[in-house]
Length: 68
Image 1 (cartoon, rainbow, N blue to C red):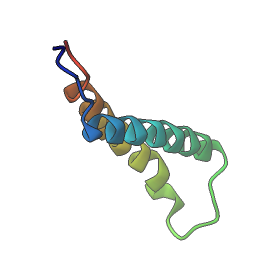
Image 2: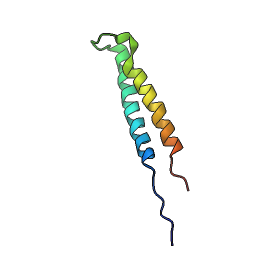
Image 3: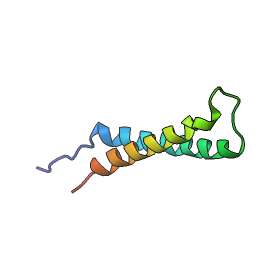
Image 4: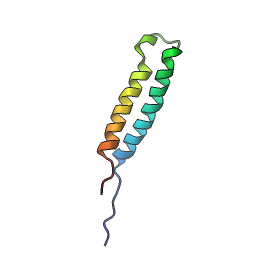
């Protein structure tokens, strides 16, 4: 009998967070040269949210990476 390996759901959640983080980070970087018309544009919420999502998603993806 062969043992069937399963992938943890947290791996896929980490990949999704990483993808969303990279997209938000790219949007936040583009907003440095073209600031949006919002109340506090100098806070750069999109950029910092993208940084947080990228770090958390990268951590989840690395920690739950399927191993042999």
